[in-house]
Amino acid sequence: MEFYQLRYFESVIRHGSLTTAAADCHVSQPSLSTQLKNLEAEFGLKLVERKPRGVVPTPAGERLLLTSRRLLAEVDSCQHDLRRRNFHSLPELRIGVAPLFAAVMLPRPLARFLHDMDSYRIIVRELPHQQLAEALTSHAIDLGLITQARPLPVSIEARTLFQLNYAIFCPRDHPLTRLRQPRLRDLLPYRLALYQDPAGFVDRLSQLGIETGKPPRIIFSSDQALTVFEMALAGLGVAVLPTLFKDRARRRRMVMLPLHDRNLGFPFVAAWSRDRSQPPGLEAFLRACQILQPAI
Image 1 (tube, rainbow, N blue to C red):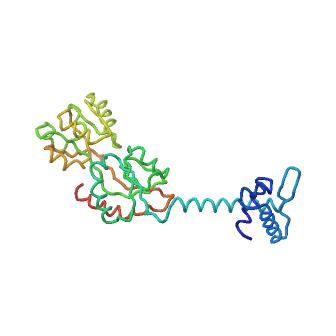
Image 2: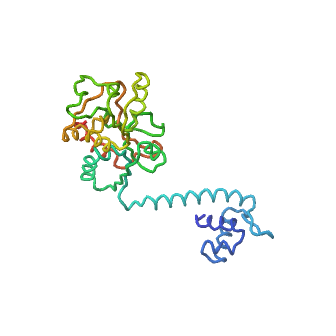
Image 3: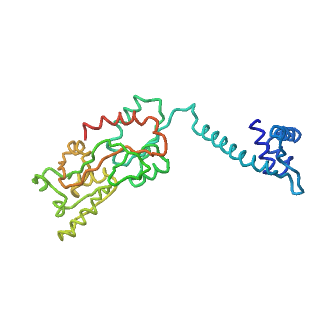
């Protein structure tokens, strides 16, 4: 039995006509009829019969039809997969990254990875934090760089790159610089520029305002950390940002005051889907990310 014979047989049953099936399979009708007879001879069973409504399968033919369609679907799926993957091209690593990491930290490890592993095709997409987990589960990206402030879906595996901590950023002459261990509640009397990230500082400060009777003076909030930093630099408010901005603050003559509240630190992780094989180049990229550790 040859595979093309099953394809001819399935086409005959699907169309109910030898003539139409021959056109569908791009063969002559006599050739198709011969192969159908050869298939019946190999099984020693009659597989089709002619009825007024066209060619229909016998009971044996119905059983063969089920198997044929399953095999044909598997082969078509395999062909599509092999063509889509294009094994003659470079392996591809699709990375999704939150805007903060993309702007402040990604260039260094990405440059090292591209220098050491030029045999990979890298595609980096900047995505809002809330979309990264969805992009992983839908396989729109292979690797996500994300702050794990909340549990990730069970279908996602994660490896911690570093701990993401938070601090106050303000001018050197600001009254907050006189505090030894500043906390979030110490921010309530001052104008604030807040970074809307998974730590949820807007909600935390609002709750503190309810508890103390001193609502926070939030004049600006954004999910773009660089914009928040520039607002603080212009003197429009005190900023709460990840400590990743330490070097940038020093260059711009701003002071970084680490916050001493509990539960303000979160792991920054590399994440990928468990229901797929490990992304190509993952380990090499994580090794490149190790250069970030001294700067945290």
